[in-house]
Amino acid sequence: MGLQFRDLVVKKEISFTDLKGKILVVDAYNNLYQYLTTIRSPDGAVFTDSKGRVTSHLIGLFYRTTTLLEEGLRLAFVFDGKPPAIKQKTWEKRSAAKAEAVKRFKEAEKAGVPGEMRKFASRTAVLTKEMVADAKTVLAALGLPIIQAPSEGEAQATHIVKRGNAFASVSQDYDNLIFGCPRLVRNLSVAGKRKKAGTLGYQTIKPELILLDEVLKQVQLNLEQLQILAMLIGTDYNPGGIKGIGPKTALKLLHEYESDFEALFKKVNWLEQYPELPWKELLQTIQTIPVTDDYTLEWHAPDEKKLRTLLIDEYGFAAERVEQRLKSLKEHGKMVVQKGLGSYFS
Image 1: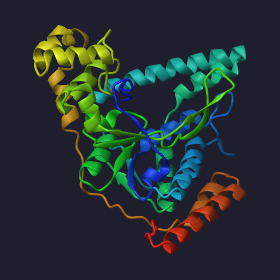
Image 2: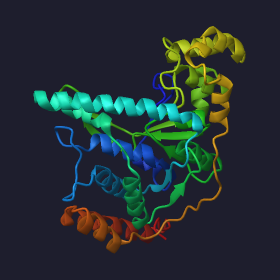
Image 3: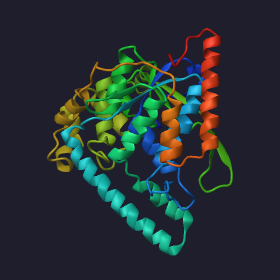
């Protein structure tokens, strides 16, 4: 959804040390899209293998995930299932936006402006079924748990955290919060130095921990009111929200109307903008996203042979780099056992 909650949430900068040994449930689709949009050549083109198949997502997934494993994090990945029916219009809008981005990219390419090419190229990212399947193969070969959500991955990740089976969910988006996720970790896959836009300088990106209880206390709302606030500013099911209403205005309205949602939605003329989407239906969708208890959180030793076959032989990754990462990962696993902390790969 990419909820615009940035100015409303309470964030705490943390380090990898704070997360060491903790189970974290990663929103896989969000993670893969990050890599698809950021791991590109200077002109914005994705990386591909000798057969023209996209590899940007696998490059990010393998190297970043193994780095996090070496930091002692216990990662599990949850994948989206069947989306709610009301999400269809969102897909239509996204398809239109991608088509416009392709058009702008071609214009920038014709004009020979690499910066503009990269900007618009990143907006054309598409995650195919084949790419998802390959990502799952890499994760399975790394010995990491893969969880298939019946519907939205964020809701399933939230469910796992709420059951006490994981410490936090991991995503760049704030969506997990409206599903009631107690703890959300951001910037995990992008932590480090990042070039500042439009400058030659760099900025340090650190992981952030967001606690739902602290967010609700900060904005003086309960969870249902936070969900209503999200609907006003725009969710994945009603992108853009109500025209002219941003986070601060929405918060003011919630404080004014409190739990009188009928009056609130009448005030903002919801039906004029969403005549085919009653607000109660949208709220119910958010509150009743299907989740499952049918998952297993078990970690196993990486299948080095399978990783070599897929990454080096199939997709043409640099053998030296892959071997170096596998060696480092193995040494870390041995060190964990020697310290008596229990292997993450048992």
